[in-house]
Image 1: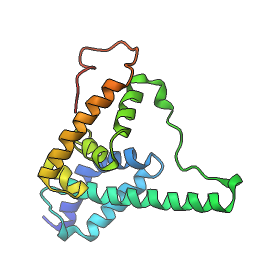
Image 2 (image 1 turned 90 degrees about the vertical axis):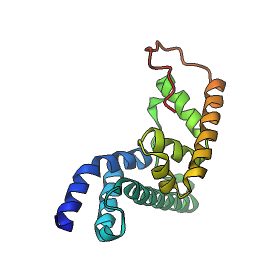
Image 3 (image 1 turned 90 degrees about the horizontal axis):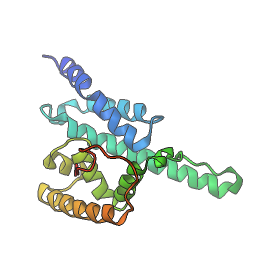
Length: 179
């Protein structure tokens, strides 16, 4: 198979995963651009990443692009604030899902973690990466990722215990921990 055919197959196999990853980090407005840029870079560097397991490499690239976008927006917002208090620009919309108590508790607990630990937990539990792949995305060794994930789980259990439990009817599987 040619490089173009292999890349096209990889694109079709992983585009939705990269798009969902970007969506959760930067929102629906910027996620398609992050995903497109990720695959543009992947095409430019196609010979330099592991063709048998491209998803972690794609996540690292998408993460770096998302972080650059967030930094750019913070700088822009800071400049606008500095120029005029009346023209403050807010790049993030309020999350109206706070009405769902269970989600609110989970988000509060996740926000209680450091940014790096939160990213590691999300990569393993939400994105479905194994520890070796998640460690590569966040830039640490597998043993370090194992210890950080263990400590993050303990902190999450503690944070969940500190939050008042939502008054919702739970299905039998709702209360089970996925972390």
